[in-house]
Length: 176
View 1 (tube, rainbow, N blue to C red):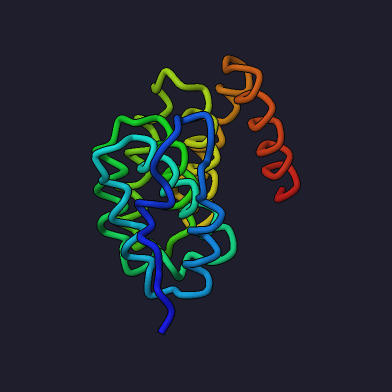
View 2: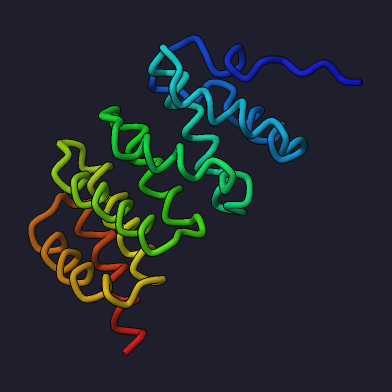
């Protein structure tokens, strides 16, 4: 049986300008999905750099498949509402909308994302806008208000927010 290094050991050290060994952690979870819980637990680690890197690995994992995170949906929704760390917010804004959410869970996620639009970080705002758009794909009732929000942020946001907004509005127009 292979010896697995603790994810915390791989993700700690250095500062928030690097991702450390999060690519190794990502590959390990892809090869051993049963270790997803270990990665999820690190979102609550005492070190902000570990939390950030764990969230980065989890977000990259969710790009291919949300199945890894599905069993932890309740925890992710709760942490999404509670965390103030910008790196966690921008990753959770992208992860949670990729999950299979009930209407109530989708509403809860949308509330958190609406709050994220007031964050001081333009990355958090931009990711929240993307997350809202992704949620609205599964919820026609959200679509009109999310489209209005995107239009507003495309007029008033930072360069990154405006660029993402233009991309999303192109998708809106393509659907009509």
